[in-house]
Length: 113
View 1 (cartoon, rainbow, N blue to C red):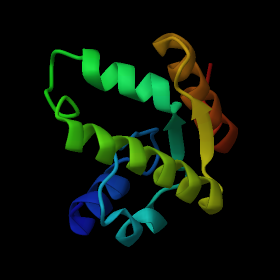
View 2: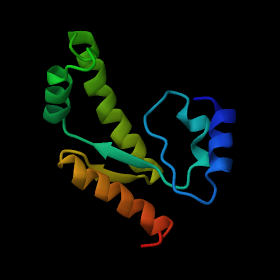
View 3: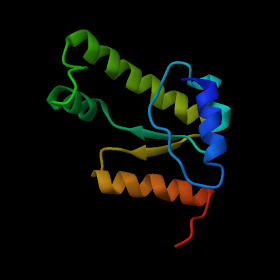
């Protein structure tokens, strides 16, 4: 993740709600720029099923990729818990997950109705 680009995005969105999604290895270098960190958590079986059944991306179909993703899932969730991130159960239907993310954001930055 390019810190300068994230700083620019943060400055441009200072008075608005913005989301930057995903995980990258150098995330600790930019973490201080975020007001809220949310971790979408799923269990082993759900992640395995989702990776193996998706058709838009082949990552996770090969045994070594699947194993790496499943191991990373456990490590990531533990790391975000230690950081005090908001943990959301992403096994729920997408509209419920989205609502939970927005609720967490609204607690930090109340939005106008």
